[in-house]
Length: 253
Ligand code: PEP
Image (tube, rainbow, N blue to C red; front, side, top):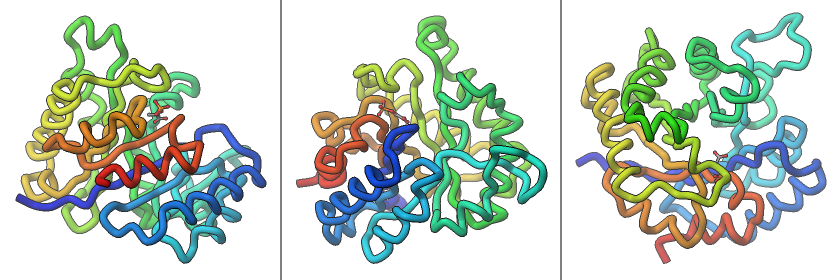
């Protein structure tokens, strides 16, 4: 079986001013040391990216943005393009987070354009998918994932040399303190991997990293990471405190 290096990613959402972000990043760098067993990413707000990039540059912590706009430049007031976030030091970008879908009207079509723009700029997209509580309760989890994966990744030339990352984030588990049961998470992750295999082939499916997101904390990370198809975590609230995020990163100890 292919080995997939875990990725522990922190989404800082709309938290932290520039001094707070640089202070948190500094503490995190000190706490993580030279961890090599996992990849680590933090996604501060746009305003703090360049400053945080300077702080983490000689550490294993890598930088991500929380969003992008698919055009390279132009009269799109308030938007930020893929080349701009690359120039601020980013290697990753989160795309289609449920908060963007819910509060900012993001669609699978827009997600598709954003993923394409990310690849064109050599960014690694972390593509978020997941169902609401009512969709799960009415047995629609798999059809929601089908649509989000099929439309989000439509007509993209994905191959194993530059795989995207997928984050399965059941919306009912984000910021709620509720975590999916291990068997629910494993079932959804295995289903996503199967979809990738059908659409893009077994080679990509075997190496693509599928992260779990939804109230991940130091107390549940080891149990989640023990599951066969979970290759890391996208962590919101618990990534804001460097001590807590570092405990998650060091889950193997
Ligand atoms: C997230 O923002 O992607 C997330 C999973 O948040 P939380 O860990 O706070 O549930």
